Image (cartoon, rainbow, N blue to C red; front, side):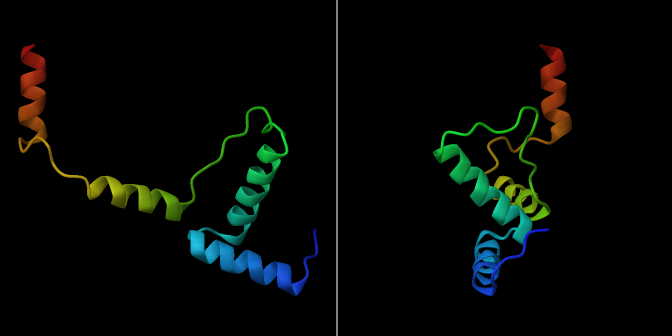
Length: 83
């Protein structure tokens, strides 16, 4: 367990709130960014997972995109199977 000063903890909480992440995710992201700048490669096989908040934000971004084809999914699939 790592013990943080109250100032460091408060900064981590503020950063997490601004980024809409958990405190742990915000700290990890900040550490990974600093590690990359220092020339450290990420551990083999490790991938950054999206938080629930990030997934919801991504879904909202996709839903906000304009509809380019007004046909129903069935109509689109029917056209694709004809080809």
